[in-house]
Amino acid sequence: MARYGMMIDTRKCVGCYACRVSCQMQNELPVEVSFIKFHEKETGVFPNVKNEIIPVQCQHCEDAPCESVCPTKATYTTEDGIVLVDAEKCIGCKYCMVACPYQARTQDHLTGVVEKCRFCAELVADGKQPACVTTCISNARIFGDLDDPNSEVSKAIIKHNAQPLRPDLGKSKIYYVR
Amino acid sequence: MVWGTIIAAYLFLAGLSAGAFLTSSFVSRKYPNAVTMRVTGRLISPVLMGIGLLLLIVDAEAGLKNPLRFIYLFTNFNSVMTIGTYFISIFMMAAAYIALMELLKKKANKIVEYVGIVFAVATAMYTGFLIGVIATVPLWNTAILPILFVVSALSTGIAGTILVSSFFNKHEVHQVLSVKKIHLSLLATEAFLIFTMFLITSTSNEAAAESVSSLLSGEFSLLFWIGLIAVGLLLPIIVESLELLNSRKMEHSEAGIQVSAAGTHDIAGTLVTESSVLVGGFILRFLLLSAAVPIAFL
Image (cartoon, rainbow over all chains, first blue to last red; front, top):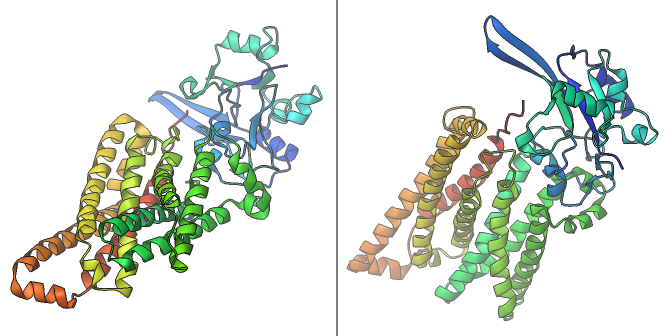
């Protein structure tokens, strides 16, 4: 059993959207729907300003608010810590979309089912990496087992002192270097 | 926002339905002769809840396409929505039974009515807890919201019952003075609760302050001040106060007693106030859903 997580180095991200496109291909999403959203944030006072590009997707929270509000138990967490939606159980009430602190969920307007980043669960089960990780042109994304101290992702998180977006909002499993 | 007009209408109708049920239970005890109001409240209650549930089903697209999935709604006891599904199911069954007995002119089982009363209150509270527990939206995430929704549910319930009753029996709606007094105090309480909620939440958090300012002076200010405050609260408070003052005068003058005995009151005032309370009740929920600003996570 693993506890899968990711580290995103925003200093390396150039905002090319390649991860978003490969995610859309992998999950067969329409053009206007994406599980990865790009946010920009300006900090500092002129002339010492910094512009960050922050790709945000489902943070696979350990105490996921979307999972606890879901009235049908369509949202669940796998043994490997991946938060998934059972499309056969979702009624499309959108309570999870309201509760998600990262607005990481979207609704499929054909089926009405609410979807989000799945850490490419089927690829990971085959021992592969999620599509956004393999496609990233600047290697800004590292994926792996957070419980394994020798995994590449665990070492990188320690080395760069990566932090969750908002540790106060819950135990999310995507760490950011900013 | 993710939840729009349909959900606002559902929250409004659920509160209105619960309020109408409670109003008719109160009237049946306090004014046994006010049959029209009792029957009206009991009949509109399950109908309005039914319309609300239909709206909810239409909004839940994936369930609309696969209706059997709604069974799963009863499974997650950590979710307020699941708890609410139980509350509404029990309330709906009790309200439908009471309405049926009223139609058949049979005596309703008292225990079912008490169950209905308890779950009517639970349903009204649930609509507030549903959005109140969402920590992501600080405007909703306050302890005062469920109270505000209950007060508004009772107020719209009284308004709906009186409004529909007045079409069938003009005389009766002028006799239920204590209902009118309760209604007036509910409206005043609602105004106070909105003021309190906005003042306190806007100091708690940036996102909440943004929500409140969009209501007071931003995107939704016209609807807030004209729709909710002027039409939904001030107008009914003024008219209702005048009506109560007037009825007091009536009791003390010879002509007044004759007029009230003849039952030739005008119902224009009633129509205006009660409709404006209903409009305000819907606008309150619509505004709270629309002005929801989620916390900034970056």
